Image (cartoon, rainbow, N blue to C red):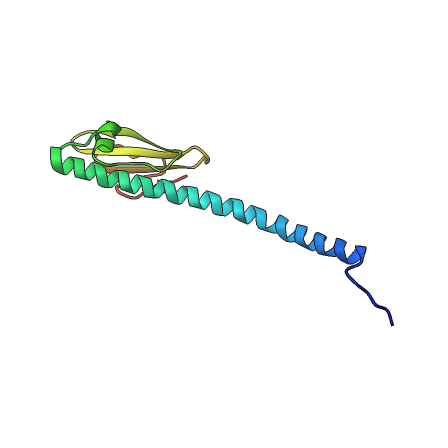
Length: 128
């Protein structure tokens, strides 16, 4: 009768190989999940921007292209998110949201503003 203590080299090599294989399968999924999280952040920030634009319109009967005005009213973006106002008039506005760690951009337009990017329906937030 053999009294074995521990694992043989082959068994240990097999365990590390299986762990490595599982990690290589999981990494692309984790990267995809990070991209989805960044897009969700862009969408949330653009919806919050829309809410502040509408609040500004309610108070002043015009939309603004000055983000400083909205920031003074309490608007904040997430870290690394940039909102660009493409157009803002009394009749509508359009904006683009970008994240510093992603190539995805999200677009939204309201009212008579010109459609931008993938956004072709008023009020429908679209990302590329």
